[in-house]
Length: 356
Image (cartoon, helix red, strand yellow):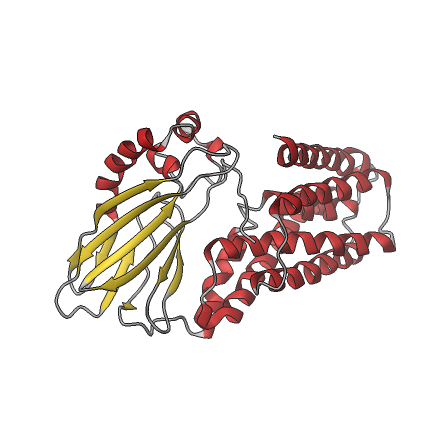
């Protein structure tokens, strides 16, 4: 279930590589416009927040024949900043540039860079450092057994990768490495999930109702995350994404009219958790999990998501609940205004995802 990310959302670069005839061949699938516009993808999770947002939008409207020479000019210098070691320093060279036609401007289009590098005679291990400022990359090895799959942020190093295969992550390594991936998709990238969790928090700062709601939400999205990642459930993102926005509006509006947790709200939160799990699954679908350690990586991703949610709740409690939760005017001056704001944002997202 590939997710139709909004055009302004930053998605990771996908780097597929293999060795053939003594050469390293690498294909990068990336958001070309963000790179050409000069956006620092380590900092910005949304291109609208960057100072180059106007340039980015103009580039997205260019046909491939106009954008291609600009991307090629950028890439010829940029690929040299990909630090590749295979016994000695290896320089990647740009072989080809391919850009999809202009389509729906609300959806990022795919561009591809084909790279090539001759390997030193006898090279059996490589080590890659992803350039600072280039955002995240999913590095995937192809054509070998026990292939390597890694998730790197800008400036991070892959560690040794056996070119003949065998560098697949161990279960513990896969589990640990995918925790930050899940956390990252809550904080800072998962604004819709953050607002939903805050909607749960603002009903009551008391621990018991919050635990009931968060537990229901956690169990539900764990189920659909696993089913979606395993390919057992596929739902059109054009349906899922607006419904996630509806879930945000629902919990926020109910906060305004309800003073306590009703039993049916927990059931509704569980249902919305199923939707959010499909949203998380589409993130994994975007860049895939290492097949050799699928379950370990999936559990690690889910743990990261949970840690992200708990961090949101902890921050909300420390900033608001601890100081004002027991104040007699907390509901009228904090919970209701916050819930109104959350409902308005969710309502805007619903309109945007259905009609804009």
